Image (tube, rainbow, N blue to C red; front, top):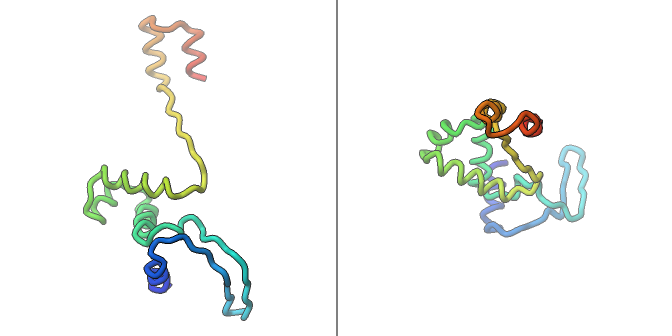
Length: 121
């Protein structure tokens, strides 16, 4: 399966394509239509391998560095590039100030109790 998929991606040279016919060989059923690829399948073979390795290593950047002989920033850059290609979900990460830092600011008089409670919530 991997070899046929690799050959198909080589033939299409990274161009967008759709599947026109699906054949279920066990049931001898054919379905025709325009079927888009799942987002992960639309990635280049190299990106698919990289993403699969990241999943197999449970997201260990250290192991990814070792497997691909690349640096931490390179792993992060590749993951970011792959993530931009995947329009599956739009996730916005908001990192709030740690409660301990808010309490430190309260203790130092930089903010009052009402402001501290507002920021913690």
